[in-house]
Image (cartoon, rainbow, N blue to C red; front, side, top):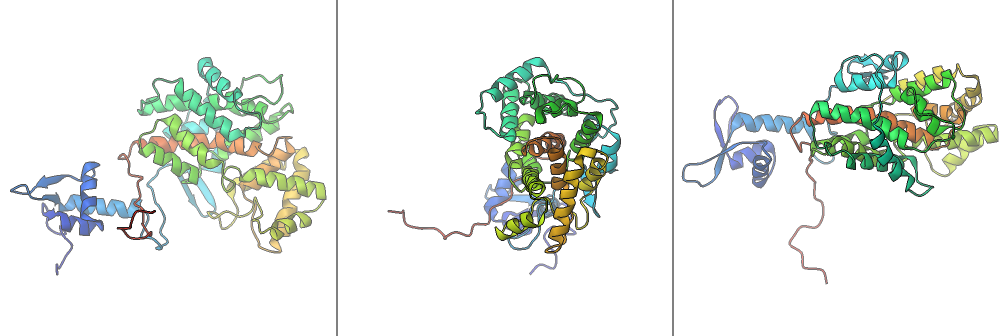
Length: 418
């Protein structure tokens, strides 16, 4: 029995493969996998039979693994990744240390994106896309079936834009920032317009509005849309953001990383959640009361959309900020009253606060937008955060987002199936 862990208090000590495996909690063959990935260095023993490993290097890797990978199955620990982008605590969230709701109240979406990417203020930031990139993306989107959903259109636009960019494999910070400033407006401009007189000019929110509503926008509505984009720009390691970081860890280019995020965001528990809340709001407005609508949701065993958030025991700060803006728009009053009725009615069963999906649904319903509009807004907004996380991940060691599977199937060897 050793009195202390191998290497502890012994600078320069070398460990055998077996000892290194014990410190890391892995099999001996996995130790050599770490060597092949460049995560450990080894030295052949005299005579060439076996290898030794620097004890301090092994222990550093063990500490890093404990921080960055899930705990043992059933332990309840979660994946934790070091990040400097978004902090969520005490029913508030911050972009690089600055209150995100305050940022969204005083800065445009483009300025917030630049803050997430560079941590530098860039007043008056504006994103434009070269016509060649937009033309390729538009052609690809137009070839899709008419019933295609918005996230599919955005994903195809991202892939088409990537194919048109021969420099997409340059992962330097400057190159990725250039890609980001072109990709976001390309995604928006590739979407079909809602009315023929729309012109692609002005801030990104104005260009996006023309893809979502047949109504001419007023200044107050555009301000709400721009604020929504800023509020939704990032939210720590949401499922889609984790997918982006996994792609970036494998050194996928920025277009591919964003495409990975778009592939996840389409789920009803993520980016599409506001569409469910939108339809529920319309039902409440048709019925004149939330009670029968909520009763039907509960009778069907469904979770009432737009309520509660696992990261906010109290109010969702994004919903609070958005509701405050919507209260200043007279035509939003019916949808706001319906949302309050939903919260009050559900509170008889389970007291939950409204989340950003319900607030976003109030905006889309009152703006004459389709149920899918919230998903489009969410995806475009979150692209800024995805790029920020991809940039951060490119600065980490490659392939670190590689958890090990916990095999629970039948043990080999088994006979070949007949």
